[in-house]
Length: 324
Image 1 (cartoon, helix red, strand yellow):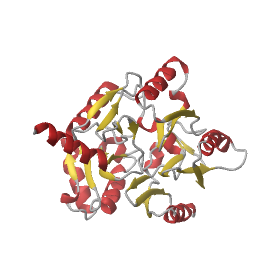
Image 2 (cartoon, one colour):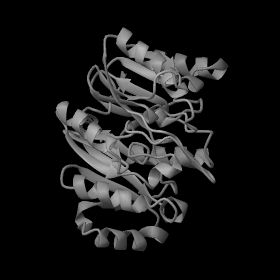
Image 3 (cartoon, helix red, strand yellow):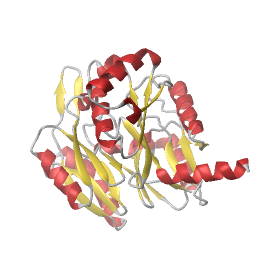
Image 4 (tube, one colour):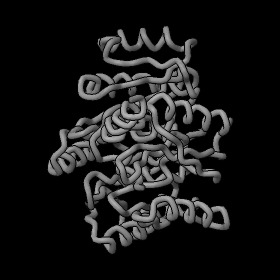
């Protein structure tokens, strides 16, 4: 079996709209609508929305001039706008049959409810679950071919060893290596500075020489290069901190939808630099304003989840075969 890298062909995009807090304070709905506007005719888009929030979200879609038929609304809401914390991690068996790695994230409120939600998602697309009994996080791992980097706090102590043993046992053809998370980032997620964009190719945030942030990303860079992969540096940005806001804006928190690369923009000169790097690597680069959602420690990758096209197709074939 293998965990599927997120640069492989995408068949579906999931998002979650929650009005209270996530939209009223950080305008998640505006970002969701912008993503849907540029992607809806290129891939299936499904948004989780509670029935209480549905009318407001539909009005938001209409105000954005997005046809309702461009988005599928699912009323089974996780009641969280960030889905990269608990959503299944997609994998496939040697036969090409898809499955999802399912777990609890004990850092979150209602981890059992969120795990049950993730199980329902897998069931809705006909995928079986591989269950990890230890607490984990979707963005705690970053995958490129056979190299899987894992946040070091998920690989420390007895429970960390159990996680590593579980992953290495179930995915023996992939190499799992713990690396530090970005210094100063409270999420402890790898998508705050790492972005695998192609087989053997990684984007990594670059910070001033000798800064604590640059020192924290160097171990991952060394592991990537030692593995024979290429590192491309993209601008790193200063921390934003005031009142209860404590966040690290970055450009690594993007998503790939086939030949499209959606990347965070902050109305800064660095936006154009990142777009040019993505274009040089063969993508149609599309900036998405993240000046609001980053204040909640979120980026495009945090609020979305792509489903690999292959496991959807292969799984349907498997289900049809079983019906016969």
